[in-house]
Amino acid sequence: MKLNKKRLIYPTLLAALAILGAGCSTLPRAASSTVTPVPLVTQALGMVGEGRLVPQEYVNLSFNTGGTIAEVLVEEGGQVQPGQVIARLDQRDQYASSVANAELELVNARQALNDLEENSEVNTAGAAKNLADAREAVRQANHRLENMISGSRQTDIDSASATLVLLRDELEQARKDFEPYENKSEDNLVRATLLSKLAEAQQRYDDAVRLLNNLEGNASEIDMAVAEASLSLAEAQLALAEQEYEKVKDGPNPDDLASTQARLRAAETALAAAQVAFDDTELKAPFAGLIAQLNLKTGEQIAPGQPAALLADFSGWIVETQDLTEIEVPRVNVGTEVRLTFDALPDLELAGVVESIGDIYVEKFGDVTYTVRIRLAESDPRLRWGMTAIAHFEGSNGP
Image 1 (cartoon, rainbow, N blue to C red):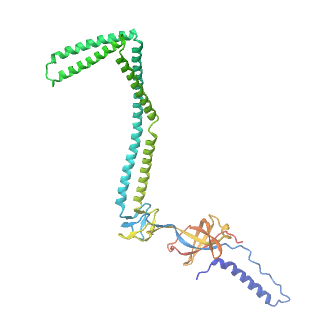
Image 2 (cartoon, rainbow, N blue to C red; image 1 turned 180 degrees about the vertical axis):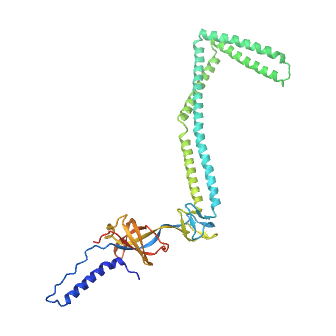
């Protein structure tokens, strides 16, 4: 049974002093002798704590997802490096497919957003052109109707007459060009080209004749009705063009944009989740160390969180004491030097330094205690995880 050494120091001293005092009181005092008083011990003794030896870093590893062990890539007692794969689950291909599908959806979602933004620019430009065309159509229809009502200006009549002369010449020339091919086969390419030019020239000439007639004479009721209907139609088309332009002038439709952006966010989230699920099919070492314990076999089922491997870094040692009370802890500081001895190695004494002092207390046997971590400044090949260590705090004063 181990004794708490620090609890024995002060009681032993007091008992010795009491025995010494009692013995002196019972001895007969010689009349001629001078009694020399025994000086009390006034030098403060350093504090002592008991702790356990642990590696400087260690962790119990487990899978975040359950499944069947497909591969175990290390052996117990083997060294691993940070990020090295320790084992894999057999669902890896399944989750890889999910990642690929999520990546495809992300590409499609990004493309949809790009298309929406690019199409918005095209739609805005198109709507602006349609609006300009609609305004010009209204202006022309209104001008035509006003001419019918109030009569035409002489300059407009002269311009129309001159245009008609030019178009008559073009029509005559088109007829002359066509005449040599008039009796050719309809499949003749030249004949077809010249016939098309003749038809276009005829159409332009007829339009010019109609315009000049409208300018020179009074419009008939039919012409007036047609002009008024044309103006009404142009005004209606202008209103529609204005509405369409208002919808697209500030960019994509807000509802369409919100929907496409939401799709993109959902795709990004789905890919991140699929990637995490894929990564969780591998158990990796978070730091360099030794596989102190391995609880994995190929073909076995494992549950999420089930201990799979114990990884430890034995390149340094820590002693964790858990019996320093609330009275003693204030006298210990980070950086305090410590001498360490070991029950299993009585001939060994090593130096250490306080690395940290716990903020959370634990109540033990009625005492409020705190964990103090002591980093060993030196090592010995005989040290083993879990050995009992006695920590002698240097420079800490008693009450």
